[in-house]
Image (cartoon, protein in one colour):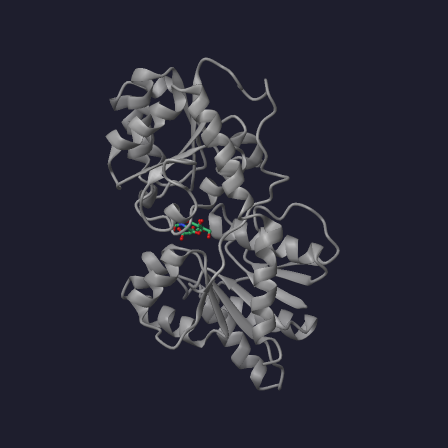
Length: 372
Ligand code: GMT
Protein backbone atom coordinates (compact mmCIF):
# COMPACT_ATOMS: atom_id res chain seq x y z
CA UNK A 1 0.00 0.00 0.00
CA UNK A 2 1.09 3.63 -0.48
CA UNK A 3 0.62 5.43 2.81
CA UNK A 4 1.13 9.07 3.81
CA UNK A 5 1.68 9.68 7.53
CA UNK A 6 1.21 13.14 8.97
CA UNK A 7 2.37 13.78 12.52
CA UNK A 8 4.09 16.20 14.87
CA UNK A 9 7.85 15.87 14.49
CA UNK A 10 8.65 17.03 18.03
CA UNK A 11 9.30 14.95 21.15
CA UNK A 12 6.01 13.42 22.23
CA UNK A 13 4.09 10.18 22.14
CA UNK A 14 1.99 10.78 19.03
CA UNK A 15 5.03 11.59 16.86
CA UNK A 16 6.88 8.58 18.29
CA UNK A 17 3.98 6.21 17.58
CA UNK A 18 3.43 7.62 14.07
CA UNK A 19 7.10 7.22 13.21
CA UNK A 20 7.48 3.72 14.65
CA UNK A 21 4.30 2.72 12.81
CA UNK A 22 5.61 4.09 9.50
CA UNK A 23 8.94 2.29 9.92
CA UNK A 24 7.20 -0.97 10.82
CA UNK A 25 4.86 -0.65 7.83
CA UNK A 26 7.86 -0.09 5.53
CA UNK A 27 9.50 -3.25 6.92
CA UNK A 28 6.26 -5.05 6.03
CA UNK A 29 6.53 -3.92 2.40
CA UNK A 30 4.47 -0.72 2.27
CA UNK A 31 5.67 2.58 0.80
CA UNK A 32 5.55 5.21 3.52
CA UNK A 33 5.70 9.00 3.14
CA UNK A 34 6.06 11.14 6.26
CA UNK A 35 4.74 14.68 5.89
CA UNK A 36 5.47 17.31 8.54
CA UNK A 37 7.20 20.67 9.06
CA UNK A 38 10.39 18.96 10.27
CA UNK A 39 11.84 15.46 10.26
CA UNK A 40 10.15 13.39 13.02
CA UNK A 41 12.58 12.93 15.91
CA UNK A 42 12.50 9.11 15.77
CA UNK A 43 13.02 8.98 12.00
CA UNK A 44 16.71 8.20 12.01
CA UNK A 45 17.20 5.00 10.05
CA UNK A 46 17.38 4.76 6.26
CA UNK A 47 14.82 2.59 4.53
CA UNK A 48 14.28 2.73 0.79
CA UNK A 49 10.54 2.48 1.30
CA UNK A 50 10.46 5.56 3.57
CA UNK A 51 10.51 9.22 2.45
CA UNK A 52 10.12 12.47 4.30
CA UNK A 53 8.40 15.52 2.77
CA UNK A 54 8.92 18.81 4.54
CA UNK A 55 6.02 21.26 4.62
CA UNK A 56 7.21 24.76 3.77
CA UNK A 57 5.09 27.53 5.20
CA UNK A 58 5.05 30.62 3.03
CA UNK A 59 5.75 33.78 5.03
CA UNK A 60 4.10 37.14 4.41
CA UNK A 61 4.29 40.26 6.61
CA UNK A 62 0.49 40.21 7.00
CA UNK A 63 0.63 36.81 8.71
CA UNK A 64 1.28 37.01 12.40
CA UNK A 65 0.28 33.33 12.48
CA UNK A 66 1.11 31.66 9.12
CA UNK A 67 -1.65 29.16 8.19
CA UNK A 68 0.25 25.87 8.64
CA UNK A 69 -2.83 23.69 8.16
CA UNK A 70 -3.33 25.08 4.63
CA UNK A 71 0.32 24.60 3.65
CA UNK A 72 0.03 21.05 5.03
CA UNK A 73 -3.12 20.35 2.95
CA UNK A 74 -1.32 21.57 -0.17
CA UNK A 75 1.70 19.36 0.55
CA UNK A 76 -0.55 16.34 1.27
CA UNK A 77 -2.33 16.91 -2.03
CA UNK A 78 0.99 17.21 -3.86
CA UNK A 79 2.45 14.03 -2.32
CA UNK A 80 -0.82 12.13 -2.87
CA UNK A 81 -0.78 12.99 -6.58
CA UNK A 82 2.93 12.35 -7.12
CA UNK A 83 3.10 9.15 -5.09
CA UNK A 84 -0.43 7.91 -5.78
CA UNK A 85 -1.18 7.62 -2.06
CA UNK A 86 -4.05 5.35 -1.11
CA UNK A 87 -4.21 6.38 2.54
CA UNK A 88 -3.38 9.54 4.48
CA UNK A 89 -3.00 8.61 8.14
CA UNK A 90 -3.34 11.66 10.39
CA UNK A 91 -1.87 11.32 13.88
CA UNK A 92 -3.37 13.78 16.39
CA UNK A 93 -6.58 15.31 15.08
CA UNK A 94 -5.63 18.98 15.24
CA UNK A 95 -4.99 20.19 12.57
CA UNK A 96 -3.78 17.04 10.76
CA UNK A 97 -7.16 15.37 10.21
CA UNK A 98 -8.69 18.53 8.78
CA UNK A 99 -5.72 19.15 6.46
CA UNK A 100 -6.00 15.54 5.25
CA UNK A 101 -9.72 16.02 4.53
CA UNK A 102 -8.93 19.19 2.59
CA UNK A 103 -6.36 17.30 0.51
CA UNK A 104 -8.96 14.58 -0.09
CA UNK A 105 -11.40 17.24 -1.31
CA UNK A 106 -8.78 18.79 -3.63
CA UNK A 107 -8.09 15.35 -5.09
CA UNK A 108 -11.75 14.63 -5.68
CA UNK A 109 -11.75 17.24 -8.45
CA UNK A 110 -9.19 15.24 -10.40
CA UNK A 111 -10.97 11.96 -9.74
CA UNK A 112 -8.27 10.53 -7.46
CA UNK A 113 -9.46 8.86 -4.29
CA UNK A 114 -7.43 8.83 -1.08
CA UNK A 115 -8.77 7.53 2.24
CA UNK A 116 -8.28 9.50 5.44
CA UNK A 117 -7.55 7.54 8.61
CA UNK A 118 -7.25 9.53 11.83
CA UNK A 119 -5.68 8.31 15.06
CA UNK A 120 -6.70 10.17 18.21
CA UNK A 121 -3.84 10.33 20.69
CA UNK A 122 -4.81 12.27 23.79
CA UNK A 123 -5.04 15.99 24.35
CA UNK A 124 -6.50 16.41 20.85
CA UNK A 125 -9.61 14.98 22.56
CA UNK A 126 -9.18 15.50 26.29
CA UNK A 127 -7.92 19.10 26.28
CA UNK A 128 -7.23 21.01 23.07
CA UNK A 129 -10.10 19.58 21.02
CA UNK A 130 -12.61 20.57 23.71
CA UNK A 131 -11.44 24.17 23.70
CA UNK A 132 -14.25 26.22 22.06
CA UNK A 133 -11.80 27.51 19.44
CA UNK A 134 -11.24 23.97 18.10
CA UNK A 135 -14.30 21.96 19.19
CA UNK A 136 -16.45 22.18 16.03
CA UNK A 137 -13.66 21.46 13.60
CA UNK A 138 -12.36 18.57 15.72
CA UNK A 139 -15.81 16.98 15.73
CA UNK A 140 -16.14 17.55 11.99
CA UNK A 141 -12.80 15.92 11.24
CA UNK A 142 -13.67 12.91 13.40
CA UNK A 143 -17.06 12.51 11.74
CA UNK A 144 -15.67 12.84 8.20
CA UNK A 145 -12.54 10.68 8.42
CA UNK A 146 -12.99 7.37 6.60
CA UNK A 147 -11.72 5.51 9.65
CA UNK A 148 -10.91 6.58 13.20
CA UNK A 149 -8.81 4.89 15.83
CA UNK A 150 -8.09 5.78 19.44
CA UNK A 151 -5.13 4.56 21.46
CA UNK A 152 -7.20 3.32 24.42
CA UNK A 153 -10.74 2.40 25.39
CA UNK A 154 -10.69 5.38 27.71
CA UNK A 155 -9.93 7.74 24.79
CA UNK A 156 -12.61 6.18 22.59
CA UNK A 157 -15.24 6.58 25.31
CA UNK A 158 -14.10 10.14 26.07
CA UNK A 159 -14.46 11.00 22.36
CA UNK A 160 -18.03 9.72 22.30
CA UNK A 161 -18.78 11.54 25.55
CA UNK A 162 -17.28 14.89 24.60
CA UNK A 163 -18.03 15.02 20.87
CA UNK A 164 -21.04 12.79 20.38
CA UNK A 165 -20.04 11.42 16.96
CA UNK A 166 -22.80 8.84 17.38
CA UNK A 167 -22.44 7.44 13.87
CA UNK A 168 -18.64 7.02 14.11
CA UNK A 169 -17.08 3.65 14.61
CA UNK A 170 -13.96 4.32 16.67
CA UNK A 171 -11.59 1.38 16.69
CA UNK A 172 -9.29 0.98 19.68
CA UNK A 173 -5.75 0.20 18.54
CA UNK A 174 -3.33 0.49 21.46
CA UNK A 175 0.16 1.90 21.22
CA UNK A 176 2.94 -0.60 20.75
CA UNK A 177 6.58 -1.15 21.63
CA UNK A 178 9.56 -2.88 20.07
CA UNK A 179 10.61 -5.60 22.52
CA UNK A 180 14.00 -5.79 20.78
CA UNK A 181 14.78 -2.11 21.25
CA UNK A 182 13.27 -1.77 24.73
CA UNK A 183 14.72 -4.66 26.71
CA UNK A 184 15.73 -5.09 30.36
CA UNK A 185 19.30 -4.27 31.38
CA UNK A 186 21.76 -7.13 31.71
CA UNK A 187 22.76 -8.17 35.23
CA UNK A 188 25.42 -5.84 36.58
CA UNK A 189 24.78 -3.18 33.91
CA UNK A 190 23.28 0.32 34.05
CA UNK A 191 23.37 0.61 37.83
CA UNK A 192 21.90 -2.86 38.43
CA UNK A 193 22.27 -3.74 42.10
CA UNK A 194 23.43 -0.23 43.09
CA UNK A 195 22.58 0.90 46.61
CA UNK A 196 20.97 4.08 45.31
CA UNK A 197 17.78 3.45 43.30
CA UNK A 198 17.00 5.44 40.16
CA UNK A 199 13.50 6.85 39.71
CA UNK A 200 12.82 8.19 36.22
CA UNK A 201 10.25 10.35 34.46
CA UNK A 202 10.23 11.15 30.75
CA UNK A 203 7.95 13.75 29.21
CA UNK A 204 7.52 17.01 27.38
CA UNK A 205 6.99 18.55 30.83
CA UNK A 206 3.65 20.22 30.29
CA UNK A 207 1.33 21.04 33.26
CA UNK A 208 -0.81 17.93 32.56
CA UNK A 209 2.21 15.77 33.53
CA UNK A 210 2.19 17.11 37.14
CA UNK A 211 5.95 17.52 37.48
CA UNK A 212 5.45 18.78 41.03
CA UNK A 213 4.02 15.40 42.02
CA UNK A 214 6.95 13.60 40.37
CA UNK A 215 9.33 15.49 42.66
CA UNK A 216 7.08 15.16 45.72
CA UNK A 217 6.79 11.38 45.34
CA UNK A 218 10.55 11.17 44.90
CA UNK A 219 11.23 13.30 48.00
CA UNK A 220 9.06 10.98 50.13
CA UNK A 221 10.67 7.86 48.69
CA UNK A 222 14.09 9.29 49.46
CA UNK A 223 13.20 9.56 53.15
CA UNK A 224 13.03 5.73 53.25
CA UNK A 225 15.17 4.46 50.35
CA UNK A 226 18.49 5.87 49.05
CA UNK A 227 17.47 7.18 45.64
CA UNK A 228 17.97 9.72 42.91
CA UNK A 229 15.55 11.14 40.35
CA UNK A 230 16.40 11.39 36.65
CA UNK A 231 14.17 13.65 34.57
CA UNK A 232 14.33 13.20 30.81
CA UNK A 233 12.84 15.66 28.33
CA UNK A 234 12.09 19.33 28.42
CA UNK A 235 9.12 21.66 28.45
CA UNK A 236 7.40 24.55 30.18
CA UNK A 237 7.23 22.88 33.61
CA UNK A 238 10.88 21.97 33.92
CA UNK A 239 11.28 25.09 36.10
CA UNK A 240 8.38 23.90 38.28
CA UNK A 241 10.26 20.66 38.98
CA UNK A 242 13.46 22.58 39.72
CA UNK A 243 11.70 24.87 42.18
CA UNK A 244 9.92 21.97 43.91
CA UNK A 245 13.19 20.06 44.26
CA UNK A 246 14.84 23.15 45.80
CA UNK A 247 11.90 23.68 48.15
CA UNK A 248 11.95 20.05 49.34
CA UNK A 249 15.74 20.03 49.76
CA UNK A 250 16.36 17.25 47.19
CA UNK A 251 17.76 19.35 44.30
CA UNK A 252 21.19 17.69 44.50
CA UNK A 253 19.61 14.27 43.99
CA UNK A 254 17.69 15.30 40.86
CA UNK A 255 19.32 15.16 37.42
CA UNK A 256 17.83 16.90 34.42
CA UNK A 257 19.03 15.15 31.26
CA UNK A 258 17.09 17.26 28.74
CA UNK A 259 16.12 15.70 25.41
CA UNK A 260 17.73 12.31 25.05
CA UNK A 261 18.28 10.57 21.70
CA UNK A 262 18.19 6.99 22.96
CA UNK A 263 15.28 6.68 25.37
CA UNK A 264 15.57 2.88 25.46
CA UNK A 265 19.14 3.09 26.75
CA UNK A 266 18.17 5.72 29.37
CA UNK A 267 15.31 3.55 30.64
CA UNK A 268 17.69 0.68 31.34
CA UNK A 269 19.09 2.81 34.20
CA UNK A 270 15.69 3.10 35.86
CA UNK A 271 14.47 1.04 38.81
CA UNK A 272 11.10 2.72 38.86
CA UNK A 273 9.17 4.87 36.38
CA UNK A 274 6.95 7.74 37.61
CA UNK A 275 3.95 8.97 35.60
CA UNK A 276 1.51 10.88 37.83
CA UNK A 277 -0.17 12.66 34.87
CA UNK A 278 -3.58 14.27 35.38
CA UNK A 279 -5.02 12.31 32.41
CA UNK A 280 -2.83 10.08 30.27
CA UNK A 281 -4.77 8.68 27.34
CA UNK A 282 -2.41 5.71 27.12
CA UNK A 283 1.07 6.42 28.49
CA UNK A 284 3.51 5.28 25.83
CA UNK A 285 6.49 5.96 28.07
CA UNK A 286 4.96 3.70 30.75
CA UNK A 287 4.69 0.92 28.16
CA UNK A 288 8.31 1.47 27.12
CA UNK A 289 9.36 1.38 30.78
CA UNK A 290 7.47 -1.89 31.31
CA UNK A 291 9.12 -3.41 28.22
CA UNK A 292 12.43 -2.50 29.87
CA UNK A 293 11.33 -4.39 32.99
CA UNK A 294 10.76 -1.21 34.97
CA UNK A 295 7.66 -1.12 37.23
CA UNK A 296 5.48 2.00 36.94
CA UNK A 297 3.97 4.20 39.63
CA UNK A 298 1.34 6.65 38.41
CA UNK A 299 -2.26 7.80 38.46
CA UNK A 300 -5.31 5.63 38.29
CA UNK A 301 -6.77 7.80 35.55
CA UNK A 302 -7.36 7.92 31.81
CA UNK A 303 -5.93 5.01 29.84
CA UNK A 304 -3.01 4.24 32.14
CA UNK A 305 -4.87 1.39 33.92
CA UNK A 306 -5.15 -0.29 30.48
CA UNK A 307 -1.35 -0.42 30.36
CA UNK A 308 -0.22 -0.74 33.98
CA UNK A 309 -1.72 -3.52 36.11
CA UNK A 310 -2.18 -2.04 39.55
CA UNK A 311 -0.46 -4.20 42.17
CA UNK A 312 1.16 -6.39 39.51
CA UNK A 313 3.33 -4.33 37.15
CA UNK A 314 3.34 -1.26 39.37
CA UNK A 315 1.10 0.87 41.50
CA UNK A 316 -1.67 3.30 40.54
CA UNK A 317 -3.24 5.81 42.91
CA UNK A 318 -5.76 8.66 42.62
CA UNK A 319 -4.53 11.81 40.85
CA UNK A 320 -2.54 13.96 43.27
CA UNK A 321 -2.32 11.28 45.98
CA UNK A 322 1.40 11.68 46.48
CA UNK A 323 1.38 9.68 49.74
CA UNK A 324 -0.17 6.60 48.13
CA UNK A 325 2.17 6.75 45.14
CA UNK A 326 5.21 7.16 47.40
CA UNK A 327 4.04 4.24 49.55
CA UNK A 328 3.64 2.06 46.46
CA UNK A 329 7.08 3.06 45.24
CA UNK A 330 8.73 2.34 48.59
CA UNK A 331 7.09 -1.09 48.83
CA UNK A 332 8.55 -2.00 45.45
CA UNK A 333 12.01 -0.54 45.94
CA UNK A 334 12.58 -1.77 49.49
CA UNK A 335 11.69 -5.40 48.74
CA UNK A 336 13.98 -7.01 46.15
CA UNK A 337 11.75 -10.07 45.60
CA UNK A 338 8.70 -7.91 45.11
CA UNK A 339 10.56 -5.64 42.66
CA UNK A 340 11.80 -8.66 40.66
CA UNK A 341 8.26 -10.04 40.37
CA UNK A 342 6.88 -6.67 39.26
CA UNK A 343 9.73 -6.22 36.79
CA UNK A 344 9.08 -9.62 35.18
CA UNK A 345 5.32 -8.98 35.10
CA UNK A 346 5.93 -5.57 33.50
CA UNK A 347 7.95 -7.12 30.68
CA UNK A 348 5.29 -9.79 30.18
CA UNK A 349 2.55 -7.18 30.08
CA UNK A 350 4.49 -5.15 27.49
CA UNK A 351 4.71 -8.22 25.26
CA UNK A 352 0.93 -7.96 24.79
CA UNK A 353 1.60 -4.62 23.05
CA UNK A 354 4.46 -5.72 20.82
CA UNK A 355 4.93 -4.14 17.38
CA UNK A 356 4.22 -7.48 15.70
CA UNK A 357 0.88 -7.82 17.43
CA UNK A 358 -0.40 -4.28 16.95
CA UNK A 359 0.81 -3.06 13.54
CA UNK A 360 -1.31 -5.63 11.58
CA UNK A 361 -4.36 -4.04 13.17
CA UNK A 362 -3.56 -0.76 11.40
CA UNK A 363 -3.11 -2.65 8.13
CA UNK A 364 -6.53 -4.23 8.66
CA UNK A 365 -8.03 -0.80 9.33
CA UNK A 366 -6.54 0.59 6.10
CA UNK A 367 -7.95 -2.38 4.20
CA UNK A 368 -11.47 -1.49 5.33
CA UNK A 369 -11.31 1.94 3.66
CA UNK A 370 -9.00 1.56 0.66
CA UNK A 371 -10.94 1.25 -2.54
CA UNK A 372 -14.18 1.82 -0.66
O1 GMT B 1 -1.99 14.46 23.62
C1 GMT B 1 -0.86 14.79 23.92
O2 GMT B 1 -0.55 15.28 25.00
C2 GMT B 1 0.19 14.63 22.93
C3 GMT B 1 0.59 13.25 22.71
C4 GMT B 1 2.05 13.37 22.40
O3 GMT B 1 2.37 13.70 21.27
O4 GMT B 1 2.82 13.17 23.33
O5 GMT B 1 0.47 12.35 23.83
C5 GMT B 1 -0.58 11.48 23.82
O6 GMT B 1 -0.29 10.49 22.87
C6 GMT B 1 0.55 9.42 23.28
C7 GMT B 1 0.71 8.47 22.11
O7 GMT B 1 -0.50 7.91 21.72
C8 GMT B 1 -0.05 8.74 24.50
O8 GMT B 1 0.75 7.65 24.91
C9 GMT B 1 -0.13 9.77 25.64
O9 GMT B 1 -0.76 9.17 26.74
C10 GMT B 1 -0.94 10.98 25.20
N1 GMT B 1 -0.78 12.03 26.21
C11 GMT B 1 -1.79 12.42 26.98
O10 GMT B 1 -2.89 11.91 26.91
C12 GMT B 1 -1.49 13.49 27.97
